[in-house]
Length: 473
Image 1 (cartoon, rainbow, N blue to C red):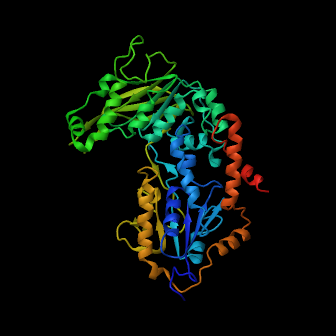
Image 2: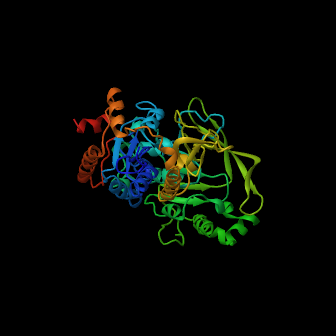
Image 3: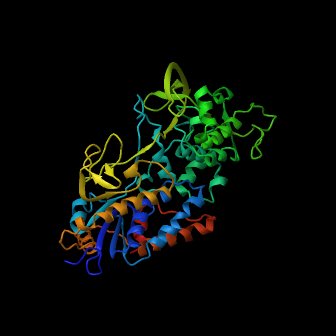
C-alpha cells in the first residue's frame, strides 16, 4: 500500500465534537503537507460548540469567530456529520476501524458539584443548564427556571458566573437585539429577581473573571453593583501578590472590585464615569471569602448557608479555609459555577477525578500514571486539558495534538483499507440516523439569520432539532 498521506492513500481522520478545538484540528490537518480526509462529527445539528451555546448573547464580537470556522469547512477534504451521537449512532470502535486516527474534541459538557447537603433541591441549578437554555441548546430547551424569587445566588466568580449574573441583571431592552433565544427572553421579561449575589470562596485579589467582564457590571442600565468595603481590605499576602509583576492582571481586577466598594450613598455618584448613583431597582452584590456548606428548604431551596473563610499561605499559594462562622441568606434560586468537567465516552479512557481524557500532548493514554499510548486515539480542547483559556487557546492545543499525530504516521499506516466517510454514511444509514452535512447546516443557518432580521437580532435560533430537520425535507 502507498505511503499514508499520499493522493492514493489519504490520511483519514474522524474528529468527534465540532467546537473550536475540533475545527482547529480539522484545519491543521487540511493545511498539512499530507493528502487527508477529515470527518467532523457533532451530536447537534449546529456546529461551533460553546461559541454558539456557551458565549453570552451580549458578547457578539466573540461569537464572530464562527465566521472563520465556517471558512474552515469549505475545503473538499472536509466532511460534516451533524445530529450524530458517537457512542449511540456510531461507536468509537467503528470510527477506529474506518479511519487511521480518531480525535476526541468533545469539550467539557457538565459542571462540577458543590458536594453539600441540599444541592439537589428544586431551585438549585448548574450554570451550564442556564447558559445552554438561554442560548438555545436543544437539549436544554425544556428546562424550567423559576425567576419569581427576589434573590438569586451564583456560586463562583469566573466569567461564566459573570455571564449568568449579567443576564439576570439586564433588562429585556438590553437583551432583545442579541441572539438570545426567544423562549428565554419571554421568561426573563417576567423575572422578579432584584438581588443577585455573586459569591466566591477567596478574596478580591484572586478574582477569576476578566477585567472586561467585571467592568460590564458598572454599565448595567437597571442594576447597581456592590462590594462591601470591609471585604475589599487585603491581607499581607494578597497585597504582595498585587505588587508582584505576575499580579498585574489581578491588580486591575482588584481596582475594579474596589470601585464597587465606595460608600453607598443614593445621593453620591461613584468616581467611575460609566456609573450613576445607587438608585437602580436591581442590586448585584459581589461577596468574597464564603463557601456554601448547606442548601436548606422543604423540597425547594429557601436558604443558603455559608461559612466565612480566611486566606492563609504565601503569595500565590494562598488557600481559603473555613473559620467556623456561619451566615444564612434567604434565596429561592441558585446557580453553581465552580468549573466545568468532561464526560466519559465509551471506548475512550477517562480520568474521572479530573474530568478529562488522560493524554500525553494529545495522544490518548490508558491513564495519567504510566503514559501507555492508546493506538489511533487523540484528543484536543477542554476534554484534553481541562476548562481553561479562551477560544483561541484551542488553536495551540489542537496544533500540538496534530503535531504528535503527524509523528505517528508510520504507526497509523496499518496496511488496511480505511473507508472513512463512505463507511460512516453506510453505518448511519443502517442505523436510520438522519444526519446533516455542512451545506444543509448552512440552509438552517440562513433561516436563523433571516428570522432574526425583523426583530433586529443577528439570528433567531431554532431550539428544537425537529424544527431544523423539517427545513430540509
